[in-house]
Image 1: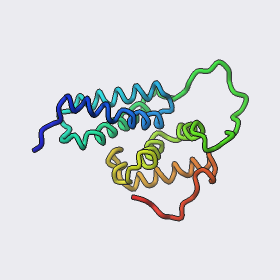
Image 2 (image 1 turned 45 degrees about the vertical axis):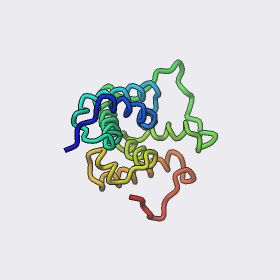
Image 3 (image 1 turned 180 degrees about the vertical axis):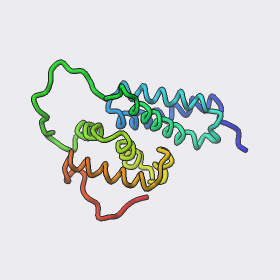
Amino acid sequence: MPRPPSDAEFGELVHATWPSLYRTAYLLLGDRAEAEDLVQTALAKTYASWSRVRTVEAAPAYARTVLVNTAGSWFRKRGWRNERPTGELPEHVAPAADPADRPTLVAALARLAPRQRAVVVLRYYDDLSVAQVAAALGCSEGTVKSQTSDALARLRVLLGDAVVPHTSGAHRD
């Protein structure tokens, strides 16, 4: 049985995975400060169960799973509304000048349900397979596929078919 990773190896994990964990957290939450909080919380939880991590190679996936599960628990909290105070209310929502702009995509992701957002981010940003996403979210592969389909349909409504084209049925697993 392999030995658990050391504290020094945890430090190396933090330095190596912080950027990717932060990007994933930002895409899930849409706010820089909350993304930093989420990554810090996920890494603290990872360290608290560090003795259960079997190998250093498994640690990044473990930390990502903790991050996604922590985000999910934040979404379930009654007070979570992902709303920001503003000085004035907008007159109307103006169409984005360029639908390919990153802020437009992040705003559209923020309008997805939390599970759909997690599936899209893990599948298409973190480039995980259906099986890996299912393992990270603790659900079936069928749930990942249906959530992905529903999320992409919603993104097509929000962003248009030109930005989120329909596929010819080819899936990558």
